[in-house]
Image 1 (cartoon, rainbow, N blue to C red):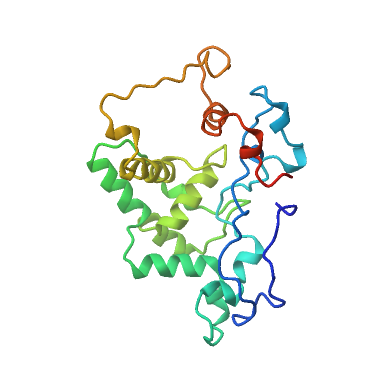
Image 2: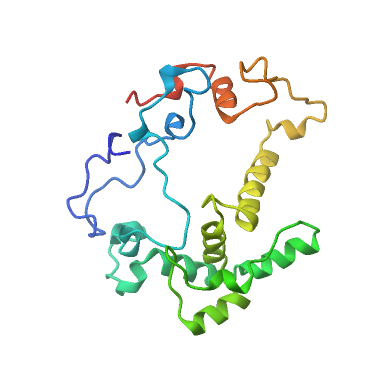
Amino acid sequence: MTDLPDFSPRPEDLGNPEAGTLETLPTNWIADFRRLFDFGAAGRADLAVDDARFNVAKRIDTLLVNPLADLPLGTFGGRGRPAPPAVELNLAFRNLTRANMVSLASGQQLVEHLRKKRVNVKELPASAFDNRPGGAQLGDELRRKLVRNCPLWFYILREAELNPGERLTGLGGRIVAEVFHRAIEGSRHSIVRDPFWRPFLSPVEARRKAGTFEMTDLLLYAFEENADLLNPVGV
């Protein structure tokens, strides 16, 4: 995403909570769906991007890239505060502390809760917390604790890490799906509020191969097949 517009003006020192005045994201920092979905395969070569700019998302796992282990002070929101201890600049520390503050259920507790509701979600076995290449390395005592009571954030990351596709699955996938579903339910214009609504976009209308309807078809319909709307930044 390096070719997209950046903050302006950009603070000279990202680690200084007093530096800079811009406190909101620029309006042109928006989703570029061309980089996430293959519009070329949908017959829209004008919306295809080169390989270097397509799907640059990283794998979902229990490792953090270096910048997330040393977040700038300005990301804390409170200006004028003294610098916190170094460990508090780590995203893992902040996520785990926040979950503890709000008494968030552990991964195992949430799996058990869903099972009581007859939702088919498998709990991670004890072996899932064994150390392996490409994942966070855990001490023996910590591993024993995580097998019984693993913080939800780490649990979901480990679950995805063990998925051959390195994508959200199981409990993590269920949570994401339910968030979207509840958002749809909460909308006054949601299709689920209309008991007479029926799907009307057929594969034929979407110009796709027989029997399929993919995300690119939905995006083309939602944006009226207008290339300018799907590529508003123009890069």
